[in-house]
Image (cartoon, rainbow, N blue to C red):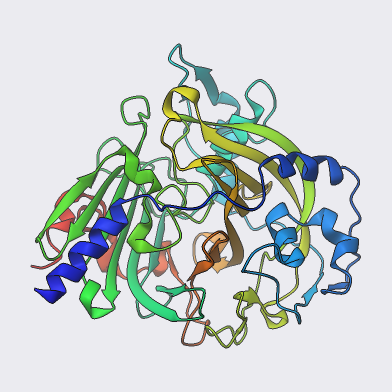
Length: 447
């Protein structure tokens, strides 16, 4: 009974939006940041940014990072922080993705419906809008992010990559391990896969995660299904398998604000691109184009968690690799007015890399327009057999600035050299779309 009670409480917490206090940085500071960064001072290659000189280069930092340097919140930049600037590297997009963008991009269109929803038309594969421009420029950048560069099959397991670390304000660390299977079911351009799978008709992506540890949470699983017809299905269908009940429960649209497995990512955050909502009932205001520092192409040598991180912030140590200046588009994402009531985020400010269209930083503001969460995404890439050069992993930290706790994704207790499985690298069992991408597959967990 004690175990059942703990699972029930954890499950209920996962369904409820987090309650936060309205305090700290106001959304209006973002407008000040846009104006203040019009004229940027770019650090030359070889520069090392530290606590002593960061203000000289703050114009190439997102607002959330500036707040960490300023020490505005409980989470603040370590006194010994060092961020060395190196040259930017490009050409990290798979050849077939580039070809799909060039072939089909010009046919992709957007229509705003009478109910205020947005509808993408004629999207086939690749990046929808290679050169986003008005009308709807902010929305088009959001669409590029929603369909950002990703492999057809992305697998993390307990054996290679699937560890998540929850850290509270007292420095207590709680690890959890997972099997994670993110899979495209349509719009596919990777070699060796069909353009469209048939295991979940009408969908374009499925996201599966099953918890393996700690033992009291073992076999708890989540499945989100994203549909091509977003007018009929404006939100992903999300299911949670509860081992104590031996069944799965379908969550409502309000679950988009719920913490995934109790971590600092809500369902609308839980993707390597910084946004996991939809392009039907969400839109975006274009704020600016800026060159910002980012860690793209890291090595993470010696980056075992927590010893390989600059603690207590879990910031990358210099051994991870060099930072570089990357061209980014900054947008403010929010729900359309008719869908905004009761939603947890008034603004999601995204700093989006203009090569692969994933967000490198996200500043989330609560319903009172106070800065709530900062999420970082540090990207690795490698040469994948058959696929070619591709993104090969994301290390991410979600900081709850108001409540001073955080979640570290891919902080690893063993050598980092074991990467996630991409496409043909994946063990054959994870090719089973029906098992890892349908509600019926959840019912196979305890069999």
